[in-house]
Image 1: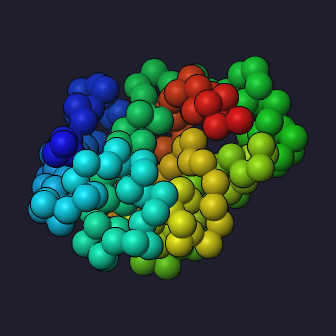
Image 2 (image 1 turned 180 degrees about the horizontal axis):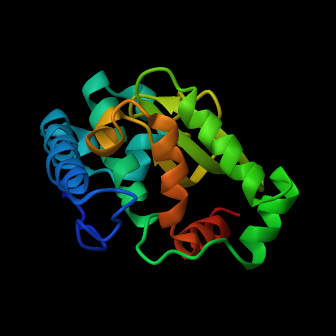
Length: 201
């Protein structure tokens, strides 16, 4: 059961001007594709080849670094594309909005916490909005790790992510990671995040 690159749910230029088309083409078509290809190579002929991606991720400590890095890269990006959208709503609604208010005191506070998690992640990695013990929390992970992994410092179910690897923003924002972290809130797919939130409860 070889892993495959999921199609982008929108055109490469759909997130302009916040995320440019060239970045999306390279990020999805080259970087994510490489994670898929290298994951398939790393698990070929092993028991891991028959496992769903999520099962692999949850028990990642059992596998070599190539599986952790590329399996994480595949999982993280597959989630990332779905939580972005053109024509995004300005804010979440319903249960997710209530949960954000309860956990952080409002959307602006969540944005600040996520942006800080992304801005202070040294080197490459991710900022995450997770469900942990039925409540929302924010965390960050290095490289292609994620909160589902059994090795994660803060464990939980990821429902929204921000990729802070340089390849996610450097063509447009250069070394100005905080500018990218601010811009990304204009393209958040709150309906998808809400769906993931309900599923994680």
